[in-house]
Amino acid sequence: MKLALSDTKAAYEWFRPRKDRRFWAKYIWKDFIPPKYSFICWLAIRGRLTTRDRITWEEIDASCGLCSREDENVDHLFFRCRETWKVWDNVRDWIGLRRRPTTIKSAIKWLVRDRRPSRIVHVAERIALIATVYYIWLARNAAIMDGKRYDNVWIVFQIKIVVYSILYAKFPQEQVMQQCA
Ligand SMILES: [Zn+2]
Image 1 (cartoon, rainbow, N blue to C red):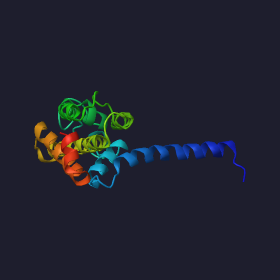
Image 2 (cartoon, rainbow, N blue to C red; image 1 turned 90 degrees about the vertical axis):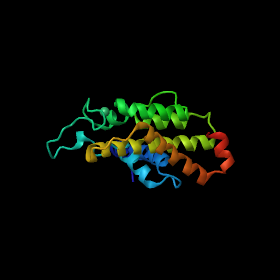
Image 3 (cartoon, helix red, strand yellow; image 1 turned 180 degrees about the horizontal axis):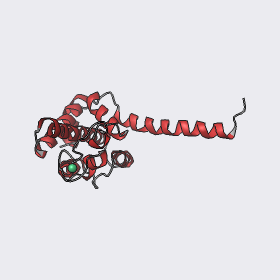
């Protein structure tokens, strides 16, 4: 069978996004990361979290549940919100991310390309990123649905607990203590 040029183009368009999706999936879905964390990160990357900009079926207050200063969407909530910055700044300091990420994808690309850290630190960074997205979403939900405010220090502490508990299950204790103190 001979493929027409338009078929080839269609095939290319079909495969390209699949490849793209596989790249993010490979980074996010790992056997050592509990699926509840991966799931929220996966939804955020695909723009499928029910942030307020996506709620079109009823009239709601569209402002960000954490800062109330701007309208809520994925970009704002995770990367432009002043409340979330406080969490990122702590996590960045801890894992040595030089810049504040602007999107989840760019943060992943940066971590994948960074060849400096050892494997164990790479794993720690990966979990930290995914857990940060998860806890920001959790804090947002708590603020909007229950009127509860999670302290940023508490959020960062939870993220560290997730990272360390996975590292200790996966690597020898001395290695974790040496490289991820
Ligand atoms: Zn905000």
